[in-house]
Length: 392
Length: 68
Image 1 (cartoon, each protein chain N blue to C red):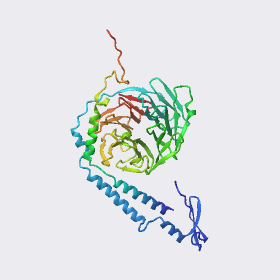
Image 2: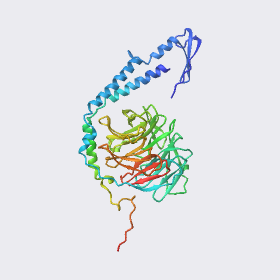
Image 3: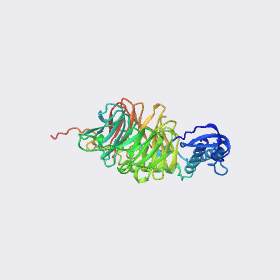
Image 4: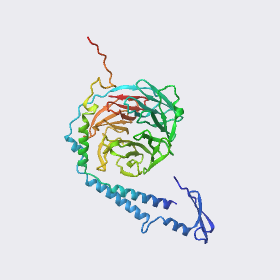
């Protein structure tokens, strides 16, 4: 990623103009180039188009940013809360922990549901991570600690996970409990920093990953080939979510650069960018219709961004909530937003009215991950207290 | 060469901002109305809003029934 350049002064014939002059010895991508200072200046300016200078580019950046702000402001004719006054009030929720899963010996970092609505995979800080089921439990050993991301394949026949090993590996699952799953592991993705998130696309054949190296990438599972990479975040990418299949080929990612970006899967292009958060964006989740997404951040707020209005439309916060939010998910209709926080609680928000509907207590340490089951009957929360809880 | 990198970066940023500034946007009132109508349409399918009878919810413990 970095071109290392070493500049030293010697005297001799210039590679470009062949005159004897003091030379600047440069290495561009390991190739030595010995130019005199005049030719060096000429080479530096080659990239500039007519009339362009660094300053003019900077000025254009500023004016484009201003224009973006103005365009967004023009369309901001009403607040979501105002429109939502017409919506029906919610009845009280009766949510309790129905199951506590204690198979982990360490912090649970991530979890995912299987499409069969009953099985889950979860990953933790130490090498083994169980696959839970009401009747079975597999444990897969991984030669790495801090498995920070895990995902169930749509078919339910495989799981993908990764973390500090910078890789995302796929493990086929089998019903035979004695089978050594680690032996069948297939390394699919390779990043240059930790893997923070992974998800299968609509089939078992492709995986989308995001990493602390600032990029996201789409991989073919069978060949391990990189199909597309997504550059644009200026710091670690911490989370990603795929758009619901009806709305097309996009995904949203959030990072330590406080931004959430929307990407086109095919072209690799960054389509939209939202930067109103005041700290790391820890989790992003699409609204069920695909027209909006919610984000959870270390700035103790969750926010709703509408993609067609291209702006933040709601912010879910309270003065009494000062700890960062780590994870969010929507209920099936999109009316409720569940968010897990570093103060061990889960807050439930009315998405439309912006008010808090409930607080769920139970975990004894940070809530690291939160996901609804595919049919919306229950959700599971994973925590640093080594347990997972199913709430319904 | 740091100046080359800066220029390339600045140009990329300008390109990116041009794309972002050029996309089509709708008013917040329309977007909000659409979000609300989606919620209303799907509210009856949402087990958490509508409430699910305990017998159907696989996670809620069923109390054993005795037929007298």
